[in-house]
Amino acid sequence: MSGQPVAAVPTARVPATATEALADFVASLRARDLSPHTVRSYQRTLEGFLGWLEDQPDGDWRQPPRRVLRAWLAMLATSDAGRSTIANRLAATRAFHRHARRMGWIALDPWASIATPRRPRRLPRALAPAGVTTLLEPPTDDGTPRAGSTRTGPRGMALDLRDQAILELLYGGGLRVSEVARLDMADLDLTHERVRVTGKRRKVRDCIVGSFARDALRRWIADGRPVLGAAAAGADAVAGSDVAAGPDAEDPDAGRALFLNATGRRLGVRGIHAIVTARAARAGLDRGVTPHTLRHSFATHLLDGGADLRVVQELLGHASLATTQVYTHVTPARLHASYRAAHPRAREARTGTEGHP
Image (cartoon, rainbow, N blue to C red):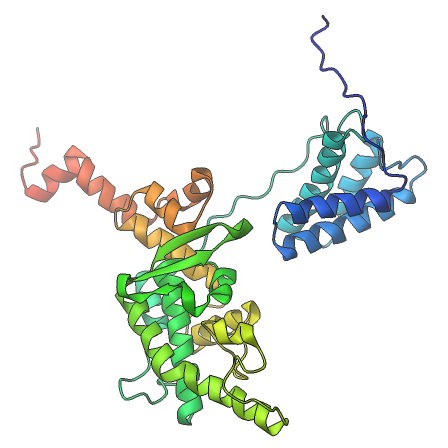
């Protein structure tokens, strides 16, 4: 035995064209229940990659030579794309050939012997607790719009209540923005301060949301959601609808949805992003605060408060503990607290028992 890996012999029917191979690969991504955004991103990248290969003298998609793949890497490196974008494009091309290898279309993975740049590891950005407090400043108790809001009347109050509930939920439960957009009324268990969430790959988990989020959700459901639902019913009536009985009259999905937009339909991911961005600007926070910033803040503040990493993993819905470990970066507060609690010299200095020679 030579000790060298044995090349797999193709046994499945090899697609006649790169287009057929790409269609099969995209179908496999959908079968794995990846997000539509990921599937579209991979498909766009591979359409560009396979089209580029066709223009190369020996750019056969089945087994492109090393120099062709290196030329592709060089082209990516000199593009205007950021490092994360380049890493995502490389991931798509490598996944495509791994799929071809598994299917038996090719004997060897052409990327196996090529070193590619590693995805940059960036620490998640988290707000300081004081920044979160400023961002989550609630509407006034009498239901009038919060300070700085330009909204007026019952509809303005409803929108403020909705925004407050979303912000409290993002931070109080650590939810992804897509998970918040998918929430239905039936997913709530406010008595036990829990929300049933459908995460990536349709994995379902129960999230604890806390009393602030619970109270904000109750107020939105009681005093805000009916107002936006009635607005949608009124619009249907003006348009000549035979039935105008709320958001579910013409749109059953809106009838189930927890959060509604200004027209009474289900609020989408872009709408939630806009809400967080607007509230952050109104609170005077730096640019770049997104729904994911609140998720990062949720995880970081839990760990700073002493929560176990595996508990945070469960709450975030991470399949692997390695994904959660990105939040174990040492914040200054955690660094000083750990030092004072653990180091003998720090304890002696604090208790006044330190001796000197």
